[in-house]
Length: 95
Image 1 (cartoon, rainbow, N blue to C red):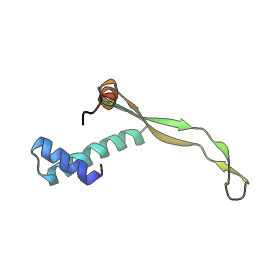
Image 2 (spheres, rainbow, N blue to C red):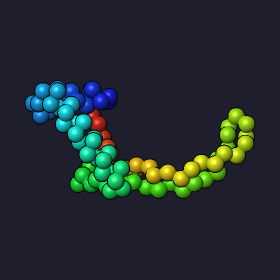
Image 3 (cartoon, rainbow, N blue to C red):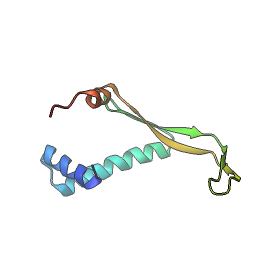
């Protein structure tokens, strides 16, 4: 599903216009991104938790040359699925 398909689905399910659904989605994603940028976490009960993890610096290898490459430490976003989402994914789909 693409972002535009998600907007269409939100509009259909809520009765909102596509423009309003797009604004709602953009606001939601912006709020999540801003909270993660400040090092916080966002928990959507039943759906999951977005949080920031630290990835340590490490030594990598350039696949072309085989030369060692230093990979810097970084903060990366992580998502842990909640129980309701896990259940929805594991429910068999009837054809």
